Length: 109
Image (cartoon, rainbow, N blue to C red; front, side, top):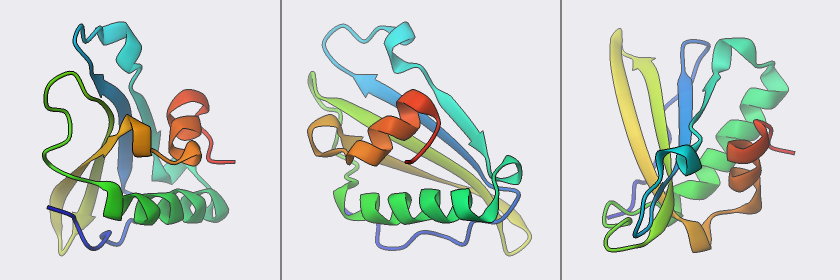
């Protein structure tokens, strides 16, 4: 099941990105990275949102079964005066290079 649309992400949004899965899932290898939109400038936010929109067609809730590695994107945001969350799972073999770089280096480009 693919998720079709990214919510509007404002200054209050937080992105948590980690690498998950595998036969012997080792916590140290997940290396979660957290990015607060309030700490990003408009250009950085735009790059991250563009990357996330490109990941939407790749996201599948069934990802991660067996020994499959994947990147988990957790978005926390506020919409209609309510806190909300979206979780995307991107199979490692389909992950865009920019997503891997964001997880590894904390930057898109």
